[in-house]
Image (cartoon, rainbow over all chains, first blue to last red; front, top):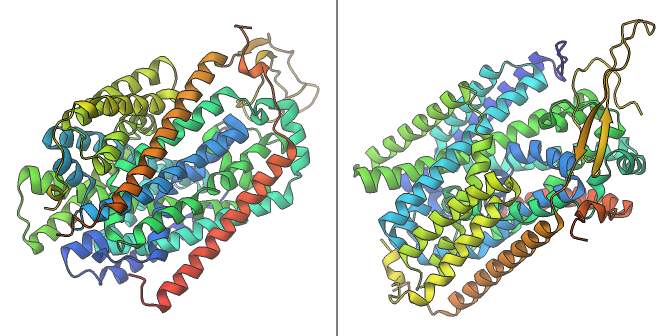
Length: 472
Length: 88
Length: 50
């Protein structure tokens, strides 16, 4: 929008919503956090989470501000196929279902994805894995913080710095109070709000726009959006899918959830969460297609979703979008804070720096790390570091970890050197493709290279891995 | 064809088919009488990724995806058949 | 033939496909919400929430 900024919401209403939901999350975090009596409770919610909460937490974590904000951008840039391409990110959750079962069988007492890499492949693969995972997690965390801050500014005129500070403060406080219990509990309510909000906005847009006219306008003015053979959209389909696999398979956000759920619940919960997630990018994205037929002039594609919702639905739409985005931000930031601090604590703290694992001290450390991570994110966000680019760049990095994890979980003949080479070569060639061919090939190339390395290495691997070594 | 008329000073285009497009702008005052003449048109060329590259990469993607799914399914089946060696 | 771009092989996705894609996705989101609520009540009654 140009100089005479007209925000969709009154800033006072924006602040009121922010405070209302912020206080609600903090209260619920404190309320559920009282359940946590031991360190394992705090970090993994007692390892007994049921199907309803398990499904909701996996789904809500995967619905990030990117899903709600970027799905419309995909629709606007890549059309119908673009939305489907975005939806394929749910395949990561589907395929993590069988993996989660295997993880629970092999490592009933495990904590993090780092634990697995260390015990399965030894220290070099583990170090490399930790670097990849931290780059990705911090980029994800910071990009969500900045996206949230910018959105609060666009939607309600809340100054960027204030928006970022309040979102992060709320998430850090309730994660601190309740650990994994708070994260999973609030995730359920946030899922319900996200689903209801997306459904409401989508249905209202369908009711108020003429889909036929929308289609006809597109056919004339933006024909590529409804081209079944749009090249970039076709390519981004597989690329997105592999990015999603890499994100889900490697990140401790998902591993810690697999450990937090009841063993028999985990596979079903991940599968169901994939089903629940699949339609969301389409339902949240299609509204961007109506921009042209409604005569909405898009300047910044990143805000097309809220812009159209505000245009079609007025104040109601703006409030709904605000709430949905706030919920999706909180549900992912809290999970990342909890799971990444867990990874730092267990892997870096306990195993590399050798800090004491005496329960009361350990819990204190874990809280300290959550604060530290929150502070680091806040500083990076406050500096307006736009890490979205880094997040996309981390696509090939995480995609290179897909095969070391699959082979490590199922094959006893996957060698540590192969895992290291797969991650190194996959990342390197993926990054090369990112800059030389285009972003829409990076994750695809990385995962295929890493797959080739693992496949070639297997016949040469003489040792067989003893699965019992995964019990620590 | 008029694409946009209003106070915004920028716009975002997407979804054009391959080909060459020409755009030009005109400033308009509050009264419809006070308007400038059209600017020099500028040309926009829309080019798509080559066919062979798309087909090749899509096939690689499909192959990679299929192998991944099959590997996980086979691994899952085999690991379920393993008697509980681990619980000992 | 070698200069042929995919964009020139233009195949419109029919209107019906777009329409149903949107309708079905909204139905899917609605069903998802319903499933979550039903599961929650079931787990809550059975004491299996946590």
